[in-house]
Image 1 (tube, rainbow, N blue to C red):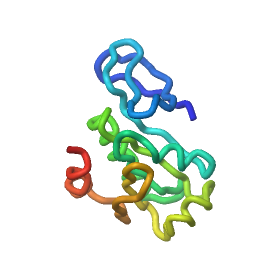
Image 2 (image 1 turned 135 degrees about the vertical axis):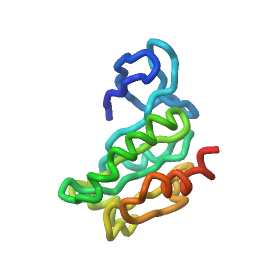
Image 3 (image 1 turned 90 degrees about the vertical axis):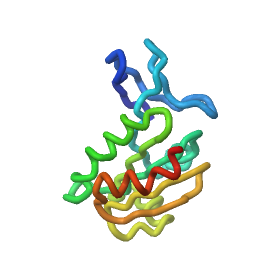
Length: 140
């Protein structure tokens, strides 16, 4: 999957691709870590949750109001924790295999993965402060 991230330092637009193992995406111009936010599918999910940093997966749907409310919070988290957190969005309506495998019954569901395995799950549109508190132990 290839998506675009804008560097917070120099403003350069960078195409996100899977970085080499143990690395995070960096700006091609200035070398700063980029916000790592992208969409996954049933086919790409397993590869996306294996990363050198914790991966926060947002199980969501386009028709879900609370999902739309939490989306900007997740974008902010990806920006603020560039190089330390990867945010992956998975549309449950278009990707039923993965949402079924992880027994996602309510959305939004946020699931934190470490080394490709689920570590924590939170259901609902959590307030920013609550989400920060939940993520703090994993972000160092």
